[in-house]
Length: 421
Image (cartoon, rainbow, N blue to C red; front, side):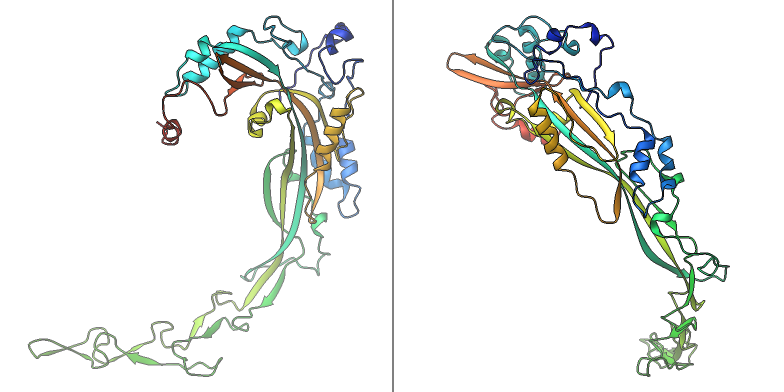
């Protein structure tokens, strides 16, 4: 959505030419450099907590630093004046749409809709063109969350590294620089064993014996007491040892070899089966495992005028606009515009809606941006009928909410789109 546009020779432009069409500034240039925060400053601020050593943030050295040249607040506010469609402006090389371009955009949009006619787009009069730019504020909070879980596995007899060799490290004392991702990645998770946290314990299921009592052989016996050499009736011959045939003859049962009894199918009449928890070893190896998650918590806010209030916010989020400011710090503060109370208030509202951070996490870095998306509302009329549509962003996306006068689908277009026809 955001497309920062910067002019290297903007100092050559007169102040009146640069800000004359910006409705909130107007008087003096408000090009204030926002804070260009270095990696060292982020690391030192983030490491101020006692439980997070500064060495953890060494991984930030590999993360790209903000470009100082891209930290200036760019102020932009173009628009149509009355019914004058022609002309252009030097502001960020933005070209004002004329009547021909407006019709071409609408005709192209209508052409991608089945059963829509192009006559209104070609012949109806452009009654009004209204500039209703939309401001989008965002705050991204990049956090690191750590938690400890206890995992057990069967002990295989290998050497362990426990607390007797060295103190166990705390969850925020683990050095995970090799796992540290790029800043503001949507999500990444890693697991690592906590050093010196291994303990060998007796298996609780089998009391360290490696075997448990077979429930089939000892169904009516007391718990913990096993009975060996239990035999059961053969299911094939029902304990007779012989198989009866229709002609009255009998043959020896091959399953029990004529004995009529077979061993327990579960334990082989041992009375014991191998413990599944420890796989027969009688011992378990327990250790602490740290689960570390890096993710970006996003807060977005849209400020639209009444003319663009009917457009869904997701349309503005995917549109291309111009960044008015872009700051990055350990904890961002509201942006400052010398001559715009509205933008100052809007930035403060975005910061105030900062996403809540889980108690098991800490903030690594934040990024705050305010952008303006050019939005043009066009009203076309013919006799006593009219309809409106929007041209949004520098990609000039056309948005038409409900009514278009030349539709012949009787509501079937939505069904066809759903069927991908």
